Amino acid sequence: MTVKNICCIGAGYVGGPTMAVIAKKNPQINVNIVDINQERIDAWNSKDLSKLPVYEPGLADIVRDCRGINLFFSTKIDEAINTAEMIFISVNTPTKTYGKGKGMAADLKYVELCSRKIAEVAKTDKIVVEKSTLPVRTAEAIKSILHNTGNGINFHILSNPEFLAEGTAVQDLLNPDRVLIGGESKEAIESLSKVYGSWVSEDRILTTNLWSSELSKLTANAFLAQRVSSINAISELCEHTEANVNEVAKAIGMDSRIGPKFLKASVGFGGSCFQKDILNLVYIAKSYGLKEVADYWEQVVIMNDHQKRRFSDNLIKTLYNTVSGKKIAMLGWAFKKDTNDTRESAAIYVADHLLNEQANIAVYDPQVFEQKVLNDLNYLNTRTERENAEGIYSASTPYEAMKGAHAIAIMTEWDEFKDYDWQRIYDNMKKPAFVFDGRSLLDKEKMNKIGFEYYSIGQ
Ligand code: NAD
Ligand code: UDX
Image 1 (tube, rainbow, N blue to C red):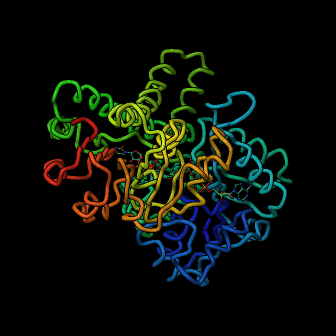
Image 2: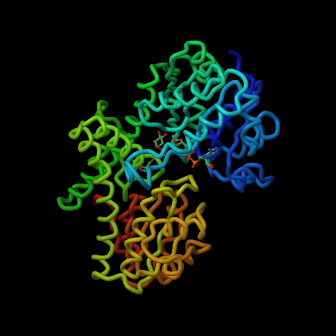
Image 3: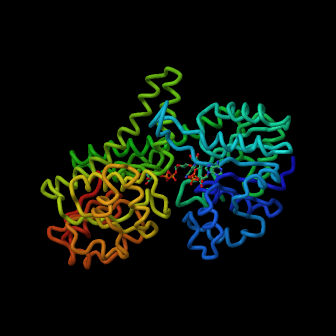
C-alpha cells in the first residue's frame, strides 16, 4: 500500500518530533498529528516557535519548515483517522495508579480508547502502528478490538517502538541506530519501511515478529537503566574507598565489551520511560510466575530510589544534620539537559525530601518554570499545595536562586551551569558554601580553590 496520509494520535514528546521528521523527509506524505488536548495542539500551532510544547534542539526549525505544508496539528481526530492509510498510536502509557497492577503495570486505557476510536470511525483498510511503548502481547488486544468492532475493514497491526532519547530526539530520529518494525503482514511492513526508507538505510531497518518488537523496547530501556544503576551502585562504594567513579567508569568503558555510554554516575535516572518500563517488565514477569526474573529487574529501580535518597540524606547530614529554615538552591529541574520534560526527575524527589526537613528551596532551570515545579510536587501529595508554594519557588535568574544560599544542589547537567561566575556565586553565599554536584558537572579542584565545600557523586 502506498502511504499518502499519515495520522498520529498523540502530540507528545514522541508523536511531535517523530512525525515532524517523517514529514520533513517525506514531502509527498501529509502528516496529521491529532490530540485530545486542545491546549497542547494550540501550542504546537503557535506562531512563536519558542512556545512549542516540546523543547528539543533542532525541532522548531523542522516545524517551521513543514507546518501548514505537509505537517498539521489538530484535534480533529475522526477526520485524520479517516483520511489516513497509516495510523500511529503514540499516546501515553503511564504506570497504573489504581486497581490491579497499581504502581507496576502500564495503564493501557488511552491505547484502548484509540483502538476503539479507529474501529468506530474507519471506513477503509488501515495499517495501525504501535508507536507507544507497550507490554509484550498488546497487539493481540488491539487486534481483537479492531476485528470485533471494525465493520469488516482490514486492519494490519505493526509494532514500531521509538528509541529516541529526549534532548537529542531530532538527531536520534535523523540518524537512528536502527528502526524496529514488528508485524505479520509483509505488505504492511514494507509500507512502513518505505516511509523510513526516505532517510534511513535499509540495513538499519530491522524487521521481527510482533512480540519480539514489543519486548525489545522494554528490554532496551531495562538494559540502559541497569547500566546507570550499576555505576550508581559503584559510586557509593567509591565514596567509601577513595576510588573515583569517573575514573572507574572510564577504565571499564574502554573495554570494548562494555563500552563507554550510560556509565555516568548521577543523582539517579529520571524521565518518563525507564522506571515505568522496568516496572512494567517486572509486572509481566510476575504475571508469568517468573519471580527471579521479576526480582532481578526490580533491583534496578530499588537502586535508583536509593541513589536519590542518598543524595538528599548526604546533603542534610553535611549541613550539620538540619536544613530547617536554610536556603537551598537547586540548579536544574528537568530530568536531563536540553529538555523541558520533568517527568520522574530526581529533582522532584530530592526537593520533596528537603521540604520534609523544612528547607526553603529556590530552583533555577533554563527551560522549566515555576508552575511545572509546583505541579510536580503537588502530584506527589506529600503536603498541601499552599505548603509547597511556601517552601519552594523558581528564581528568574541563577544568581538570584543562589544568592544567600547555604547550599547548592546541581540536579541537571545543563551546559550553561559550567559557565556561571562561580566566584561571584561564592561571594554571595552563606559560609561555609556547600555545593552538591549530582552530575559531576563542575571541576572539583577549581571549586575547592574558590573556597566551596564541594561534594560530587562517587568522589
Ligand atoms: P506524552 O504524554 O508527551 O504524549 C501523549 C499524548 O497523547 C498527550 O498529548 C495526550 O493528550 C495524548 N492522548 C492521550 N490519549 C489520547 C486519545 N485517546 N486521543 C488522542 N490523544 C490522546 O507521552 P510521550 O512521552 O510522547 O510518550 C508516548 C509513548 O511513547 C509512551 O508509550 C512512551 O512510553 C513512549 N516513548 C516515550 C519516549 C520519550 O522519550 N518520551 C521515548 C520512547 C517511547
Ligand atoms: C530513554 C532511552 O534512552 C530512549 O532510548 C527511550 O526511547 C526513552 O527512554 P530518555 O529517558 O529520554 O530516553 O533519556 P536518557 O538519555 O536515556 O536518560 C534517562 C535518565 O538517565 C536521565 O535522567 C539521565 O540523566 C540518566 N542517565 C543517563 C544517567 O544518570 N547516566 C547516564 O550515563 C545516562
